[in-house]
Amino acid sequence: MLETVTTIVLLLMSLSILICFIRVIKGPTMSDRLVALDTIGLNLIGFIGIIMIVQRTVAYSEVILVIAILAFIGTIAIAKFIEGGVVLDRDRN
Image (cartoon, rainbow, N blue to C red; front, top):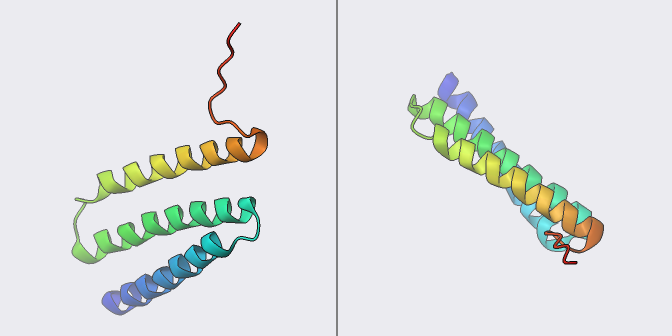
C-alpha cells in the first residue's frame, strides 16, 4: 500500500515540476517565473523526501538541506533584482 501511494505521489510531483517548468519558460512576468522557480525547489525537496521514504534511508538529508538553502538564497536574490535592478549594493564614497 505504501509503495502504491509513494509511486502516485512521485508521479504527481513530477507533473507539478513539469508544469512549473513550463511556467518558468513562458512567464508572462518575472514574478511568475520567480514563484515557479521557488515552487520547483519546494517540489524537489518533497520529491527527495519521498525517495528517502521509499529507500528507507537518510542518505539524502544533506541534499535536501543544500537545495533548501540554495532555493532560499536564489529567491531572495532574484526578488531583490526585480525590486531594484541590482543584487549587491556597493556604496562607494
